[in-house]
Image (cartoon, rainbow, N blue to C red; front, side):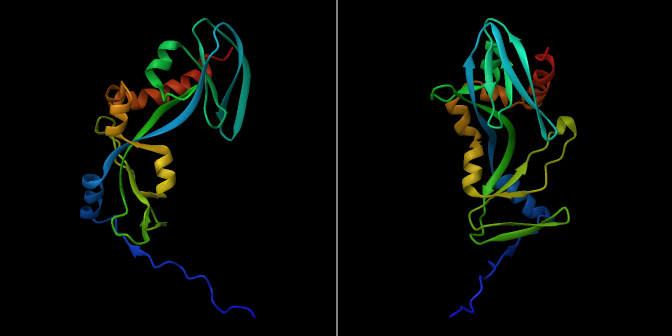
Length: 202
């Protein structure tokens, strides 16, 4: 006998991020986090190796010469870069697991959904939703670059925990994080990756 019951939509509580007091609560109550990516790094020294990098939706590849002291860094999307030992020390942090390093890629402020119920909001004309345990995330702006903070977005708690680390935890666990966290460091890592896609290819 077929059931007449249908799956019920969760009852969302609306959050108005257009209100200054709501935005201020996220910025003031949220903790600073660093987004990160886990990579594999291996010493390769002098010889040749396969490099890969993304151009749009395509992945380009080329065989490139390497030099004494070079390391191969492999990202989760299989992007492959050659870095020197000095660059590895500057941008990547060993986790203690064989060949695994993490690299910090951004800076956000976030707090867990304080309402304890599913929430929704209209951001830039689109409705976004989050569950009762989601993280409310704002990418902080850079006053020196005249960049405002991003509009808030919601991230499931498990996904957030796998990609973000509290700043205080990161600074205790890894050396050089405080230096990296200055705005120059946040810009330079993006430029570093873009530069290595072009200058290391022959």
